[in-house]
Image (cartoon, rainbow, N blue to C red; front, side):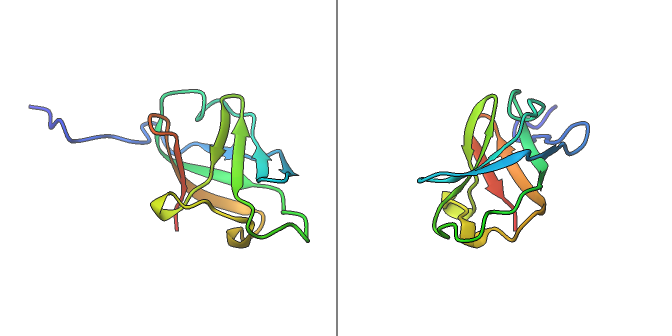
Length: 110
């Protein structure tokens, strides 16, 4: 009998996407990705996000970070759905995140 509460995530491995640009707006700092591998499909699990750009110096530290793809804008959140802000961003590098396409949650881990 299959346990109805058992859920498998990341079948086939952990996908990696890479940001291609960063845009500072009046209400957010937006990182752009073109990968449809994660955001364009029903998906729930860990993803590796290679954030290749730095946020320009002088940017307001309270602005939230977002990821934009062909499927729309996703707020990058942390615990309790609080937005990750410029102040939280450690610079270019690889970040581990959890994404759930059903709820739209994109959460930075750690």
